[in-house]
Image 1: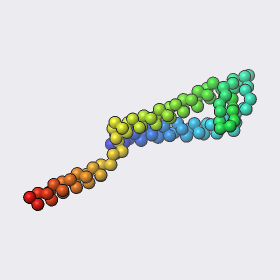
Image 2 (image 1 turned 180 degrees about the vertical axis):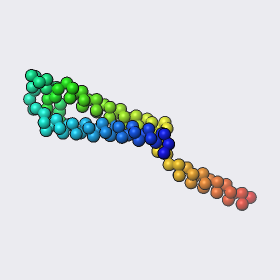
Image 3 (image 1 turned 45 degrees about the vertical axis):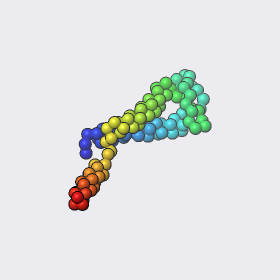
Length: 112
């Protein structure tokens, strides 16, 4: 495995991990979070989960935002990385195309 494939896979795994944590925390806050603000404990930041609103602390709200935008930026990074470096290019197909081209040239020489 070359270095480009390794880097691409690591970026992809990190991006999907961010989204998996985001989905987990959304479900956790929906199940455990209060449905009314609690200013005495700092749960004053509304978070919309489907049709319900739960109130989170500032740290919980920032965690969800960082996970979302971090995952989104990592997924977009893998598209840009794939465009410029093409780490998942199939070398076998390239070899077969080159071999066919060489065979075609050789067969052309026979007809001359």
